[in-house]
Amino acid sequence: MMSIWFNLRRLIRQVATATAICTTLVGASGVAALSTSKQAQAAASGNKITIYVSNNYIGNPWRAQMENAIRAIASRAPYNQTVNLVIVNSENSVTSQTASLQTIIRKKPAGILIDASSATALNPTVMAACAAGIVVYTFDQTLTAPCAVQVREDDKAEAENMARWLAAVIHEKGDVILDNGIPGAPSSVIRIHAYESILKQFPDIHVVGIFVGNGAPGPELQQVSALLASHRSIVGVVSQGYCSAEYQAFARAGLKPPACASLDTSISAETCVTQNMACYMWPAPSWVGAYAFVQIVKELLGGPKPTHAITDYEQDYFVTELGAIRFEGDAYHQVVLKAGVDYFPDAPSSLVLPVTGGNLGLSIDDALKG
Image (cartoon, rainbow, N blue to C red; front, side, top):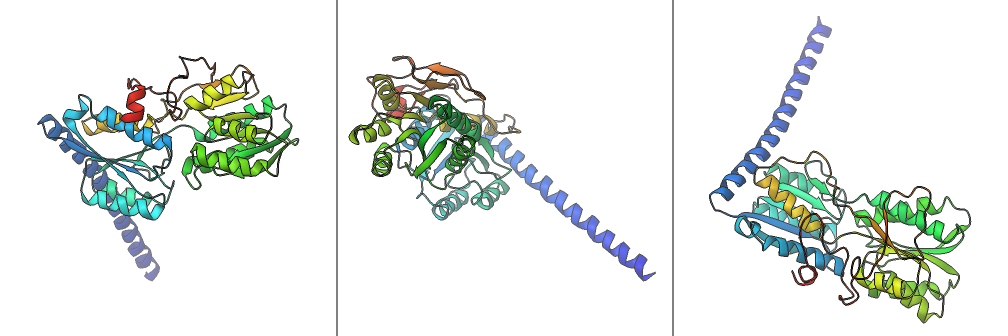
């Protein structure tokens, strides 16, 4: 009898727990749905909805152009009639961005766009935002909180493609160096691991150094120059920044330019073409933030919430004529760089390419000035 009574009490507790969990989940979903409905009603009545952008790092041209693109789109109809945009930059640390997000949450905006300092450390704060009825989208450096919609590239697949290209163009042998990007940033972590995992499959390729480019040409030039002081046999570089910086570093050291895979920028594309380098340009469009902004507005104004990560803005990759080789496992479409089409010789050197996409209609001025 005691055993029956014990089991009955345990069953009652399990049912009660399950009911509480279901109630919580349904309640959270209901809050988000009700909140979105209210935002749509507010916009329809002429009241603007507020969307915050939380950016954890502003120390390179990409981040500046990302914010400019969002401002440019938000300043146009119909967004300027329905949305109040606020951009907040925190220091490049989880602690700083967490504190910044907590302040934003207390202001109860309709939505938050996040370029994250960590894939996981911000999740509790983001879950609190979602529970408060705030719609959250994350882009570029994305986080993994299940309630946040990710707008991102396939960093792993793209990085693996870059490494395979490098292996092919240097005939699967020689010394190479790799860029750690912005240390700790989610996509930088994914990319450096992907580079290493592919290149270790080639026994005659030796990774003799890893540098921290921080996505900026100045730091990259300094770091690569330091490595060349002790490694003068380097034939290839996989960068998360600028092939133009690699060219400068090698030229100053009196060395032949390396084969180089890097971010797609105007200065890198022009340098690679005019200096007859074998180059691969990886497009990480700075307009992804503007694209995420358009997507979150759609949801806030009554559209459906995406059920999976949004990756359909991805681009082809670009190569110079010397870098136009086919290789096993190539996962993307290859385009040979053409002046005035894929890059712009008269554009400022800091311009990140491609300038626009996703039907955004952005111009060079939008990217540089907002």
